[in-house]
Length: 403
Image (cartoon, rainbow, N blue to C red):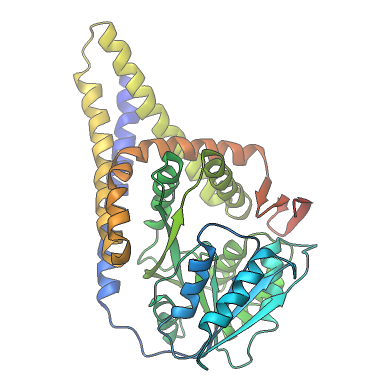
């Protein structure tokens, strides 16, 4: 019991630190949202890599045409001329591109040979964008940006000392399935790690803005060669150059989700495998922290049950477990309050999933442990129908393509 109490005390202390982080995250969101946007609206190129069809794709892409921004271009890039997403894109261009403030282009990058397909697409696209563009913006097609997204993402770059501005995804379950809710809670803990610490923030490839001059000075397109992760590579380059990354809460992008259990494990395992290769200093704490939590929380729960069956006292271990659970639940509640304030259009969906955030968070720790263990054993990932072997942070081998 003394061993359990010792490790339980450590988990409680970590829970208190985590709760403090959640409070700081909520305070940062409130302060950033209250600030007026800088009057900085240069010409922008928005790069949207596309591959295949997915649920909600039309609405996601349509949102790119509905940005409250003076002038910008949208560059759609795919590896194949017959990709099914391109027909939908062309129809959207015909329907919605009716003003001179938005220009569009479709680029066929061809199959990747020495890097991930998304990275290859982006390397080709940035070389063919509008020469007037002063800022590059990267977006994923599974996200649905709100109308203020582009202006909010670009505004921090008015300060030339900022290396890049980034948002992040926020999964919103649309079918009420357990897998979707687990993915939402799993992802939420990453989102709330962002905040005022400019040196600790990271770029997310689905919502990042960077000055063209910075992109070119850091030779990002060249650094992308041989990689699968566009965002980890960009983050590392900015950190090495000591250029801060500004997190923009208003650019937390809704990702409407209806994943299955298979898709949940494929997604979460892939994220940790990529982290293992490109940022092992982040993978190690995930492995150790989730292992410690699971041993204490789930092992402690089993201990309480055994002691109860043996008619031994369970008051102290039960109290410790309750404290651990309440600390995590309180953080989830504070975090969700902050998110609802910046996504009013999804108020109903967010509140419908509230109970899952409050209850499921311990199980996502178990999922993180599984992901970290899988990442320690394998570097093979499947992404958009392509299987890669991640040899190192600068070498990715394409094993197979489904289409």
